[in-house]
Length: 153
Ligand SMILES: [Cu+2]
Image (cartoon, rainbow, N blue to C red; front, side, top):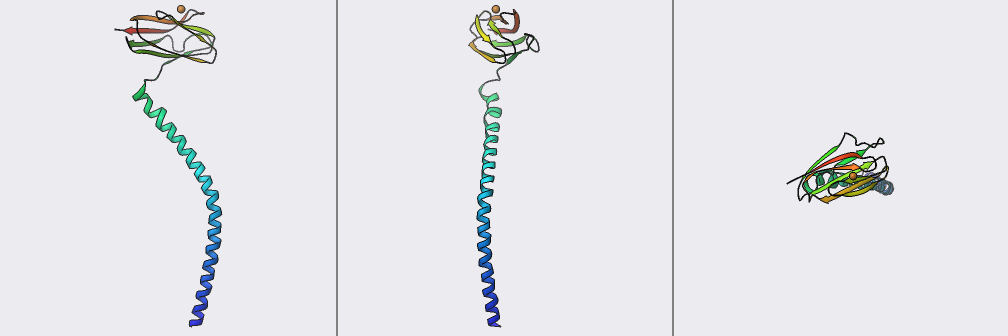
């Protein structure tokens, strides 16, 4: 009985050791492969999500700046949706962008600012609303009004 038990015990130990070696060897290989795969996947995914969720989408619109309006000029040289309207208080900052399918020049009357438009490109305006009144911005070559800017006291 005791010899048999000892033999069984020895056999079990050997099996256990072999199993451990085989399993641990296998696990090591698997771990390396899966860890690398998982780590890369998790890190990339988490990084993307953190960037998308954290900075631009959730935090910026309410806290920092209101979204900058973009006037889109179609291939017909006219503003999509008609002439844009922008109302700001005097002393605030006027901000808008113009995205154009055609070449022209944006002229902001009153403030007398002019920027070139190139097809497919976007230009940004940012200037202090220092003059009260109602002003138009137009595509200079086409004499096409694209914006009515109202600066209120
Ligand atoms: Cu003009």
